[in-house]
Amino acid sequence: MLGKLMKYEWKATWKLLLAANLLTVVMTVLAVCMVNVMRDSGDYGMVDFVAVMVILTYVLSMFAVYVGTAIYLIHRFYTSTYGDQGYLLHTLPVDTHHIIIAKTLVSAIWVGISVVLIYLSVVILFASSEDVFFSMMEGMMETIEFLSGEEIRVFSMIMTLVAGVFSIFARVLKIGACISLGQLSSNHKLMVSFAWYVGIYLVGCMLQGMYYAFRWALYSQSSHQVDYLPYFNNQWETTLLAGIISCVVFYILTWYVMSRKLNLD
Image 1 (cartoon, rainbow, N blue to C red):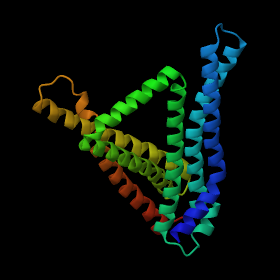
Image 2 (cartoon, rainbow, N blue to C red; image 1 turned 120 degrees about the vertical axis):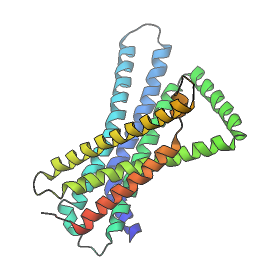
Image 3 (tube, helix red, strand yellow; image 1 turned 30 degrees about the vertical axis):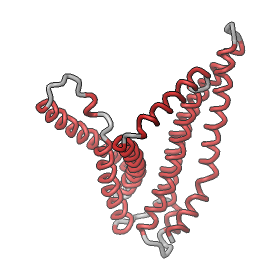
Image 4 (spheres, rainbow, N blue to C red; image 1 turned 180 degrees about the horizontal axis):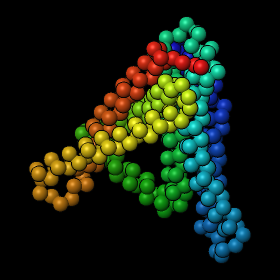
């Protein structure tokens, strides 16, 4: 049943989100072409003006794709779970866990695709210059050679990616939990959901600040170094632990409301 739910969710979202990601690809190609035009152009003229406008449109489109993807997935979760479509969804002989997992996995996949494409787009744009491209390739080869004999660093890189994946899941589940908690209110459910999101965000920032302040205090007592920045870099353990805890907490909240406090009025 989980596979069927994921298939249905994918069919309901792929058209619009695929078009948004194709926009990223098209704008990247145009931006790279315009960068080459500006580099080869000697004097500032209409061609350079058009190139600048295209690059500005590229920046705005990257922002629009990322934000638009998030807004669409939020709207999709709300309407299909607690909106008009929710009446049909919750009458199906489907376990609540399967509903949450299916929606979370599909949403996380789309967010991951958008993030990867935007990241690659920016890298390709900066690498459009031959000098920059060859410098990046040389740096990449040197990094691979350096890491080939450093199993610990390779492990850290892998775990950093894993922590990033859990962070994406945590963000998706946080949205679902806030929307679910908003359904506990009899009036202004969307406003209450937004208030829950702001409250959880502020609490998270406070806990994160307290955590780093505590580690800063411990490190300052055990080390006489002036530069503390390296101590806070590459802390994949913290990111991974926070992501796992957030996923568990937000998942339980969503499941509790959806299975015990469901109110579609």
